[in-house]
Length: 369
Image (cartoon, rainbow, N blue to C red; front, side):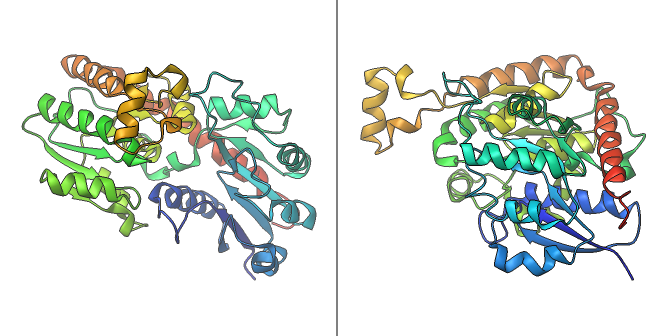
């Protein structure tokens, strides 16, 4: 009889349909499957315990695919996490990630509730294996005194079929994929500046905007300017294949960045928040630029007045277009050098894959598996 593995997924099938979260789930399943023939159940992270209880209790092992460590995760993101921890069913955390408020002037590690801190300590005590996907996430775990958590890199990079492939310098840029931003209404001017800069820098290239989740503002932008776009989230298992024949990715989605780099495609990221920052700190090349909202405390009266006239909330902050312009400057310079900075980056990606494979092997080596 096959052993049953439960995957706790972050993929919001009934929400934004963010295809990057589906990638995380699929790559983890692929990696686990290399160790044996298992049956898989996938459950949504925010279900009720009553809904998932029978599935969890029948599992040989539960894997949290990129545990989303958040300030009040005990209540919002993972209402049944405590139940899993206390159930006695073996579980592991693969490539946990944070979304710290890196745009604040305050202590970025101070926002976790007492309940979440206590729950994470129980996860730390009972998990078979616990890893993180980025240096910032690992530091957060260090600050929270979660000593079992070790850095692995993102499981979303895992693709054993790419082993041995290398980045190639001087690749001709014929197709460019631009990934859409989260909070697109707030980021529309930044997105527009990025799009215009890319078209100017690569006038002969085929440029397509990839929508990684439901994104009405970007759809409207593309329609108004006759920009080619694809709603790749509508094909959750194959939509990311858009990066198969791309020569360059530029944009906002961290798992567009991962998808391109794992295919040895040049990729540049505008970091929208702590998730993007996590990758910017971790990847061993300068291929991203922070693009955080400027908070109200730093805005002049004129900027605040403009926001009010546009019926925007000043408390949300303003997203500057300067980071998009900075990123274009970086890409222009790298283009002139034949994108040589990517040479050898596959070695770090392979190290992520080795780390995650080892973590999964340890998790699956328990007496029940």
